[in-house]
Length: 134
Image 1: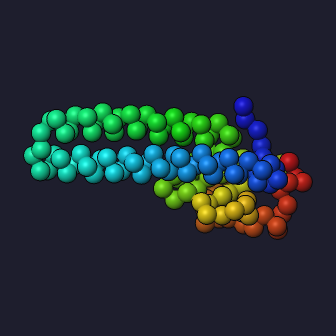
Image 2: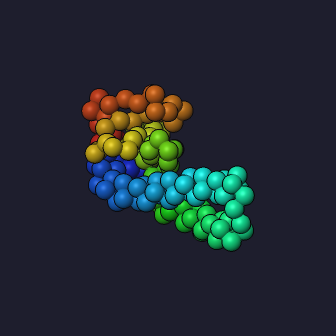
């Protein structure tokens, strides 16, 4: 179900969101590692006995990765970049739809930006307290 977040609601949801994000990131990193291992097997001429099980493991990990993204976004957050650790929470500033912006490593929601601007357009939340504007 879709809903807008206040700053307080986003901060309250953040610990669970971080946990789910970290799981997704771990799956993404596992995919990268498995892809590298598969390329190594192909380039060194190893047998299908090594390749096939690893390829099946990659397929399973890809499935788990996409499932983890669905679970993460079911919290109401929108994933902008797993690799860069960018997630946005839909919010409102007066009548304008905006994003509350979070980057991996931050301990709370400190920034927001307009719908059409990204990470570079972030503005500090304290300038406009979005929790009172929804």
